[in-house]
Image 1 (cartoon, rainbow, N blue to C red):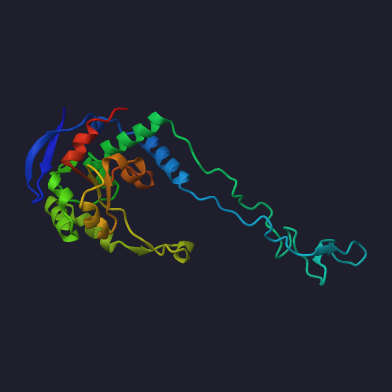
Image 2: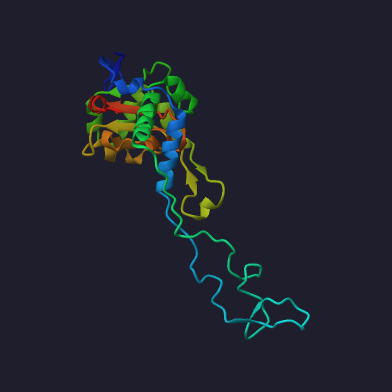
Amino acid sequence: MRQTNVYSVSGKVSKKVDLPEVFDTPYRPDVIKKAVTAIASNKRQPYGPSPDAGIKHSVSTWGKGRGVSRVQRIKAGRKATESPNNVSGRRAHPPVPERIWDKKVNHKERALARFSAVAATGDADIVRTRGHQFEDSVSFPIIVEDKIQELATTSEIVGVLENIGLGYDLDRAKYGRKIRAGKGKMRNRKYRTPVSILLVVSDKEQAVFKGASNLPGVDVVAVSGLNASLLAPGGDAGRLTVFSESAVSKMGEWSL
């Protein structure tokens, strides 16, 4: 059984612990991508135009013999409308709200994706390939004593992460905030913030949830809420993840 270091909140190695079997799961980027795509699809909201859009006019056709096209025209005028080939007409094949966006993933595939994504967080090369920045001395997977769960202020959490050697990634997310390209700027998502550290704790009642809420790109999640989308945003595994010691103990109870 593999062992790894456990960091104290001061950034020093306090002891070593045995790693759960989940960290020995084979790396399966194909299964991870499939699970993340399904999670994103299941979050989509159905959309489409009104059933009456573009066909609310009182129209008639003039028929032949006038030297103009035989299209539907507004009764009190000559403007062509309503047909898909006319300006102000209905759309030919609009999106329909009845479309089902959900994608199904087998239970064991979904579990394998989560396990494989967890294992990827314990490989420094995969994490670095994803674009995260950290000191070379950091040991993976990153496990910190349970005191980190009790930190309620943002400054305390930043201090711990910097002591471990993860401050570079916090700066990458903080100063990497850019204006989004495309129409998303008009849809209440003008800025795009890089994804940074994921903090995994034992349960939802920890003070660290409030303290980390102000850190750009940082997410906090309980072990029970872990999924492939959080561990591998966009389907790319190897997110820089910090586990509390009790969270790792709970992960030892997992089974595929």
